[in-house]
Image (cartoon, rainbow, N blue to C red; front, side):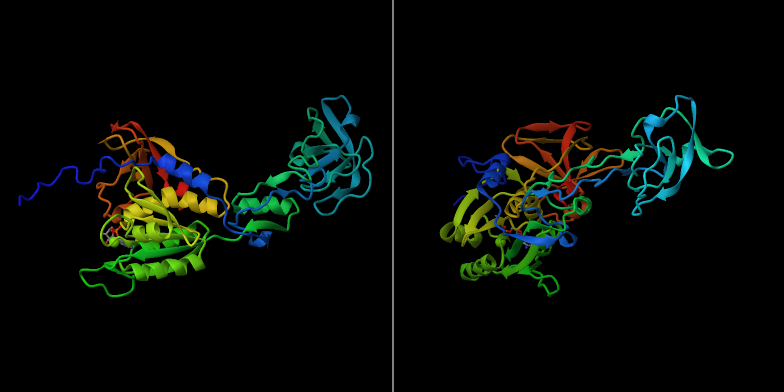
Length: 421
Ligand code: AMP
Ligand code: MG
């Protein structure tokens, strides 16, 4: 029998198979899924990173009362004489933050007022202390005209008012958001329980890090990577174990993971090979949408339900598993966790590389910005080159269409910070 020659396009996508564009796959994910976690009440102090489950309304005005924006002197604007240089006698007393002045400031007089102090009755305008001098007797202040009515004051509710919505459901709370909640008088709020995400590695050749590997074995690189991605994203990582390529063992692993987690990320065994039991199990015993997604690296990706729990089957190759986790895993987990914003911010930057690609699939290249503000790509596109993941600070996204990139052309760059890592 004649040995067939190797095909140049042995890594090309099989003809006659329909490949789903990345955007269609993402639209499908976003429209077909919904939050799977219950709401719970938490204190603002414990709310960092949590997803708001219900509109949050302000319980008070901000500021609650008019107060001074500066250290200075307050008076009634209407009593100012029509002179270039104005002198106002000082009324005794001080209005300070937390120590309101309880009297009334008489018309034509000024009072010492400090930043954050409630504006006393009789005052509607404040002059900055740097803008005054004292009169010779030190009984009054002297300053130039030109102040506007209401100068240097913060009006009550100028920021927000009682009943205003300060957050909508789906917002992920950041440190500055806790400041807003506190200012709004909110002490506890409804957030979604954190999404638990199990990570499973499959492959008879894999050895867990820390154990001894024979030369024919490789260390499981995906599990530490995927578990720590989940942690970074604010979800609860669940180690779902590592299983050899045996359908009975893998089935049991899936069952356990579905009990302990709200979503499952599986790597390895997702293709159609003899030992690829992940796709077979998900297809035969779960509900599988096999997406032959037109993406490099990354095909095929299995999206399925196992005992009702969403499960992803990613390629075992760590580069592909990483890219798939960012491009498909992150938006999915965001939706499942109750988050409303799933868009990823990208930037148009000039290329420091040349490349031509054919039409038919989107490509993600490991990339980083150089000191000249151009984006370079890793020297090899080989998806076995794990070192390129650590070399890179982001991904260059090349569109589904054919493209020839010349140096200086604008390309789409997505820094890893856009993926929350
Ligand atoms: P698979 O998707 O199972 O066909 O695996 C594709 C390639 O990725 C093979 O070379 C595997 O040995 C490798 N691989 C699979 N899982 C892992 C893992 N968890 N860590 C590192 N390499 C892996
Ligand atoms: Mg395998």
